[in-house]
Image (cartoon, rainbow, N blue to C red):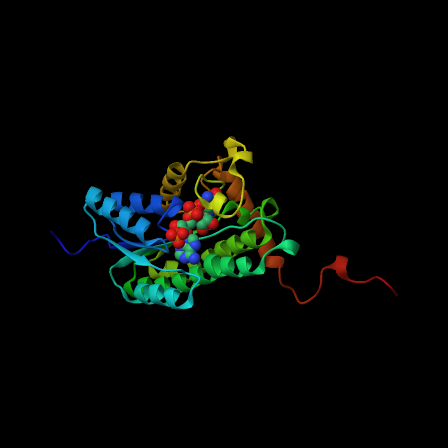
Length: 268
Ligand code: NAP
């Protein structure tokens, strides 16, 4: 058996369930070796054993709580130095429910550590490793609430807006080095995240919920098409292009030496 996989290894965070576990299956199917990261070691081991048997790839697991500084450092170090890793899928994330005034700030802190801090550290390590190699891909799982923050919890939505923003800037930095970057903005997707965050999934209209396999397949189709931003459920790509165009139109006027006329006081 060959010890070198031309495709390299896909490091997937939050690979023990839901979207991450589905990415793990799809990447193994595509012939990538796997490095699966999450807290639940037995679940990771069961998945990695199944995928390596089914697809003949190497699958390694790394138990880590990405809100823990030492665990995050260990994964970051591995990602920075392991030249076999060619894809990072920053998927681990948590959600929460409720209004900011009544929120549990310890949960808020953990969510920011996971959704924002760990994703940032891992993106940086991947950019350094892949940039030096002149190849590699970074896929960041955001959410449609990055574009529609009024729909859901304030902090969760803000963390996902961060993921979108970071991915857009990162793309400008590493695309010239030969790297591919993508932000995926799923709508509601049937996974464990709802129960974990205290949401009652039974109240959600089924016509706005996508099955996880369909969501990941669409995201990977967008990746194959070279998309920077993929919104799996958006029927008409022209709607996104219109949004991008409106933003570009603001660009030349976002910083001037004087305030807009409507903000100049007219008292004489
Ligand atoms: P999920 O089934 O709850 O999966 C979350 C994954 O993250 C699990 O593998 C979990 O594994 C891992 N994780 C949670 N806390 C962790 C920690 N402290 N350290 C390391 N790993 C941790 O939910 P999902 O829907 O697949 O979520 C995946 C991503 O998709 C998240 O970023 C989420 O925000 C995003 N997303 C989901 C939806 C949706 O409707 N489902 C929509 C938009 C975006 P362990 O418990 O084993 O650690």
